[in-house]
Image: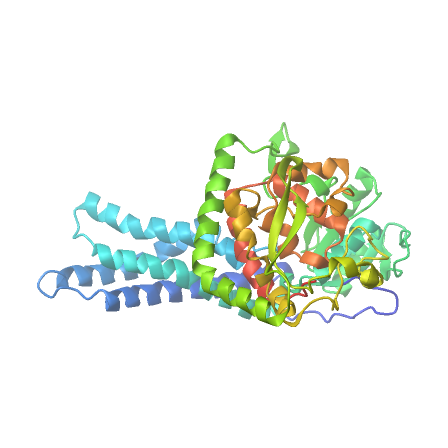
Length: 492
């Protein structure tokens, strides 16, 4: 969503009785607090209803549990705040329901089983254990769902939107603007760009940027456009020039975001530490230990086995539909590049006519990446796709047989994109690190756009995934895959 010449949008100032930056955090903290309290109350009432007390034994305990629950609500809120569940929504753009799930699980577990510990230590009547289990199970599901609804409602409010000026006009600034434009859920609206001399950097054929002025005009532009955030994304500016921009904003009530140098190698596991006041960004050692590899393999094997069992009716229906719809085998096998450079045959449901490979040259001119990036071969509305195949592709059902590849140890549930051999030949030397892990059924590339992502961007995402691996990140990506599929992105 870059702002180009002739298309500048005048953004009206938001009415507010508090500083503009803090308005968004104030809004989100309150809607999330309401969601948490409603979730806790509903979980408690459902647990009371589902686990009826024994009148002869539990009547007193039930009254005590109700009193303890009501008086402990402030402690629940305190636990949630300490865990970061109300943390800095005015500054961060990447809070999500997936992140909430881990925090809610931790807070509810500590709070619930803390009841038992406190009762044992103080000598109070023991809570009904079954009721606690039911409360815990309901709360860890219900509260994240209510938080998701709260976030959706909060993001619709005018106070959630933050106006942004991007400092810089080079490739990094354009990249940042495009990513902001692709994610309206961030609640960021680009007002325009500024650069140190008021002129845009060469755009390599892109449309000229609409510059609001030079960096010296920034304080006035912030006030004129009710700007909440300034994102510094210089491509070539010096350290002193960047410092000058930051210092010019010290008296303004705006959030300053800085795209760091060498941001391409920074992932979620990077750690900030200091030496005598000098901040250092520590990169994790990009190699999994034997125990981490065993953990990932166990997670894959159990997940794939469970998936095959649960999805077996769907797999059977898909197989029968393919056999009825067109002649040819049910499965499609293709050689892909695997971990450590070992090749394997990936399994998919056949979605094309049986002679699709021999007809590839006939449709090469339809390749969506033919001009921009011929390393990738993707055709929208490919005429070789069968009627059933189109449905399977749209819902990614054609990829479910890859669960067998996971069972065999050739793939992971989450991992780098499995490239065909022709594509693998174009991977740059530094990105060969992506072969340290098995290719995955899903991954960063799937969540952030699948076929729509350029080849170079895809290899960067794979590199970041491999060098920042964690089991928590795998779980997060699996959960983000579901809404990504629900958006029914085009599958080619």
